[in-house]
Image (cartoon, rainbow, N blue to C red; front, side, top):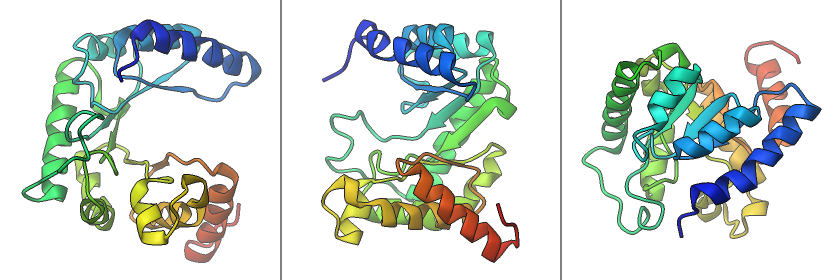
Length: 214
């Protein structure tokens, strides 16, 4: 069931303000709504992540442009309520790429510079296991968009199916494997649950593959 903007603000703004008061780390707000993004920004958020690719609320892109906020535009087929019912594509990799390219162009036209746009192929959002794997095998293609690529695959359902881990909390090993495969294709940003474990894996990967320890 959709959560009203007022409830989103009640749940998120105080938490953002508390984090901002305790630490200088960048904070992202995950929302489709301009009112929520506005309240989050006032509380200290400096990045907007929209799983609808800034298509849900026509006021969100103009707000982000006016506030100078970087944004993450994510691909999803259908709404969260129905997106996994029967997702279909002609070619999932090219279809997602073309959609992101169009959305990035629209955001630029709305006043958001390409340098402030992050692209997310939307693993698990309106995709079957096979769709997810095709996207993961071809992540390097998305560098052609000219934006940083964000990979958010941590604990997703396909990891549980392929890795034999029905419980989401048991999917850290598979999530780390997918994260490292993404980094190997040049992905610049990872959205993860198991932060310390993923960071350790990345340190070892960097030491072995590119000779950088730390």
